[in-house]
Length: 297
Image (cartoon, rainbow, N blue to C red):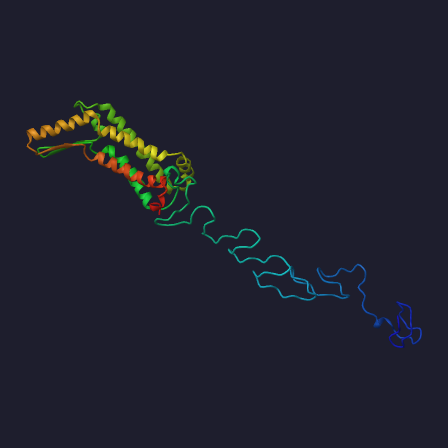
């Protein structure tokens, strides 16, 4: 090295110039001692360099902090605003109350509340959960009418102004030549069908029962099968030979003896039974043929 004062060549590392006596230490560049750790992520340039913000590109100096949620170049992926989609990372946090890819949002009138059964629509099956849709109202009314029908008159008459009527249970206790026991059996089967259908509708308002209904409606044609059984026993009760003979003889008696002042018929019970089957079956048949969206709304 050369002396910075007189220019004399002196050995490297000399503290004093042998020619002029100048102090050479003050003119030497600071040397980074061996083993001194440079700040994290900085280039070695013979001196200290500022600490880069975590995750920022190394540009030899300070870099501004990126605004929250903005993309960074050369560093970690930015923090996404809450509820926004992320690109190349984890799925975004859905805003509270929004659908999560399964089920439906909570709704009110005519809106599904807790999603649909996985088999809803297959084999005419009813949805699990949901609000009061047109289909739901029809099915609920149909089940109720079917349940109530055995308690209304299946044999009604009016003779000289006096009305009489008997339901299926009373028909079984009449001593007028009618086959008594069979009407109790008809009534019990129709009642059980109505109870089953009512159970399916009531469970939609009890979230803890959803899993039970889910298993039931996934049985192929279970609901339409129950309706078919109910209709079969309604027809058996309606066209029972002994009951038809009583109605025909009653009409003949009225015509001959009371000059048209009375009547004899099946009563109001069968009407409720037929209406119940129709109301309960229509939404299920629509779903079976792929038109369920017409009423399930």
